[in-house]
Length: 188
Ligand SMILES: [Zn+2]
Ligand SMILES: [Zn+2]
Image (cartoon, rainbow, N blue to C red; front, side, top):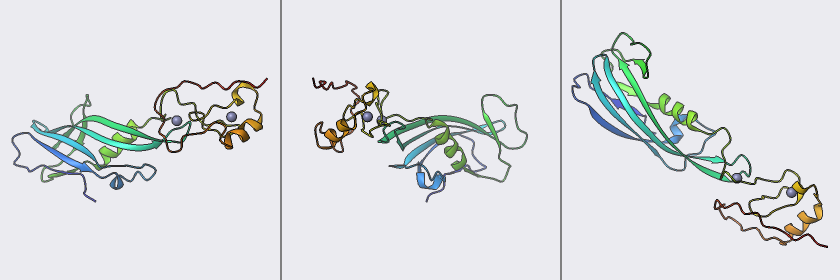
């Protein structure tokens, strides 16, 4: 549980770069799963007002496809600029200003990182743009097997046939991004 602390000695007169590992478990984002640690890289530069922090967060978050509920790995890559002001806050321009009084030398990046992750998340994650989703009528994952409910022919016998392996779904297979619909011949 490493805190995301950037240590900025008061004697800093040259810019330096810090790279910190980001353990998603420390971010208080309990709804989210982080399959691997991320990184945050920060360039700390002394400026007239205090220090300018410019950096980038890179992190992977595991979400659920909003249509088919399969896991979706979402890459977060967000840049940021913050001015740590020694006393007076500057005018609100492009940069975010944070008061960082003289005598302080540790800046905790956790709130910022948390915010960057939350802002970067899509409202409706999709495993692919063409995800066909789960049929609300028969429950079939339509990425794996087509169903005919959308044709207005929601005959539950089709679902029964599929469940018997009529159209064998590939277990555990990740949807590969193609979106061809398989056609099932209508019985005559
Ligand atoms: Zn999906
Ligand atoms: Zn269906």
